[in-house]
Image 1: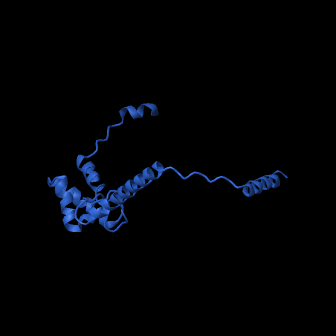
Image 2 (image 1 turned 180 degrees about the vertical axis):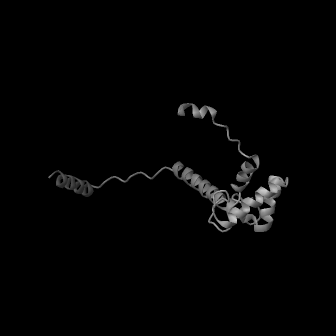
Image 3 (image 1 turned 90 degrees about the vertical axis):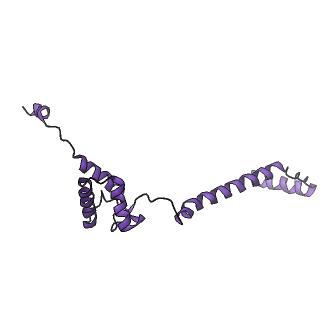
Length: 141
């Protein structure tokens, strides 16, 4: 009897508005939490933001309009992936430019260094050869 129960179970259909609310909430940052998406936060503000998203979806607003509403209210900080514009571009491109300059400089330095042959090793004098023989004898003992 209990084995047949799953056969008669009704398929639960997810509300499309709730699914879209969650999708939008995943792209927004909770303003009071530390880098936590609104979808995952349990703060009062995050709950209010999810309610606003839900209300605006029911009113027929698009995803872009809803996101713009929150950006107008909280600034680009509210976006988990803010657009790369203005002074923030330097922050994004600075390390890449530095890495490119260092890599290119290192490449040309090594290329030039490997092209120039090393000077020949000077021959050992008899005195130096005797010191090497003595050191080897000490190691063998």
